Image (cartoon, rainbow, N blue to C red):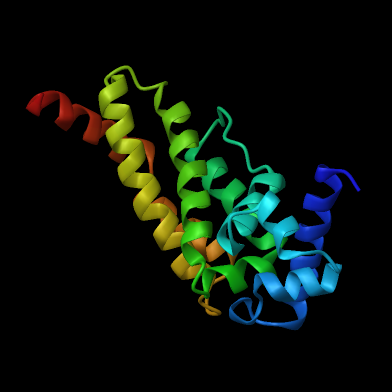
Length: 180
């Protein structure tokens, strides 16, 4: 079996195990025994369970693009989360939630950085600061609302867009220019 195939098999096995066990119950031994491979084979491909989960997210390919609106950026992230809702909620509510937070942050940071290029009053330094601030706060907020059963995709979208809009971003850019 090639390295690529074994990596895929490990990921597939992990995802199957998540349907039977909580994330906290799944360890390297359980994955190896299910696949009938050695721990050394697992560690050849992944440093730990966190690394495996991050690789699963990378393979899902939520890629930042120059989207037309802030709404589309947030909606793409929500579509991603709801596409595999069970797995993403398991991760978000577990001790490996930081992997999903980091993944969401990375997507939002890249997307917002691309989006903010259209504002003439926002230079690259201000762009980075605004993108980082919003990506951190929005990824936290989205994941908090995502695991709350009282919220659905549309409600989350509308709540986030209250404080993420062009007018607010433009004013932040203007205020940064004043203090620079």
